[in-house]
Amino acid sequence: MRAAVLHAFGGPEQLSIEEAPDPVAGPRDVLVQVHATSVNPIDFKVRKGYQRGAVWRRPPMILGMDVSGVVVATGARVTRFRVGDEVISSPSHMRPGTNAELVAIDEKECARKPTSISHLEAATLPLVGLTAWGCLVDGAKMKAGESLLIQAGSGGVGTFAIQLAATGGVHVATTCSGRNAEFVTSLGAETVIDYTKDKFEEVLPPQDAILECMGGDIAKRSMDVLKPGGRFASINVGLDARAQRMNPYLAFGVTIVATAGFVIGTFIKSGTKVYPVVRKADGPGRLTRISEMVDAGQIRAVIDRTFPLSEIADAHRYCETGRVRGKVAIEVRQ
Image 1 (cartoon, rainbow, N blue to C red):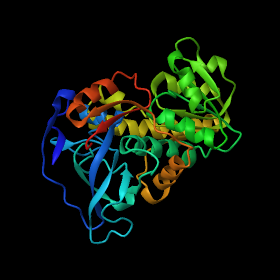
Image 2: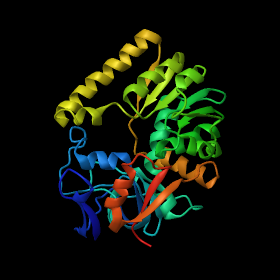
Image 3: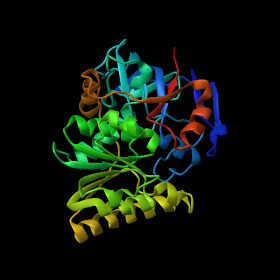
């Protein structure tokens, strides 16, 4: 099969399009012919080597944690899918990834693809959808009528989270640049703060919950707009920033200790419940529900740009600019 292979930790130039061995489906796996995948921040963080303490894989390796495609073979114990089924997944990062023409995935990490959208659109949804679900449904347990601040609302997780929260009757405020204000409003945000002009903590009333993905100073300032006993869901615990300053394995250990201290200390100090969120690759439950919401018109995919697999290095470069509105899709099969 053709695949984007990472030969060494480093820049996008370390990605090479070449022939790689076809994966073999295990007893509980489906073998998926990849039609489309996408690039997420986790991809270039792993590529740079920042995640070595958490992701115990070494080059040569295939990246990619989103897929939409067609089942072409099934393992002996697979019960939920048959050859020909269209599926989506955000599979485990501990196995070869989705930046390839074929990928083997445990069936419990797959859901049926939404029928109302293309493979390109569908491939942009699993990882950000499961992450937003973990933050807002599993973590913060948002309810209709509550208030929520979503940081960086025009990004991948942000665009999905705004729609998910708004669909549930949550009053959404978000930060973004002025050029994206009308866009995030169209997704369901009621209040938009242009971070280039205003400080969100100076213009927002206290919020019931916050979804924070920036880390650092933004995370600290976000605490200033939480109601007493509020909920704080975070997908950035500072691992990558620490890995740039120290050994990545030491950075992982320091991050675990620092995060535990932050969770406990914040609760003791103010009653705030902090939820460091890790995406759960749950196909039958969360991902199936997301697929149903897409077909019901409650969630839509947001694609900024599309690149062919042969230009995935350029896709990484574009994503690293931090200017992506929604997601970057990768077309593998036309």
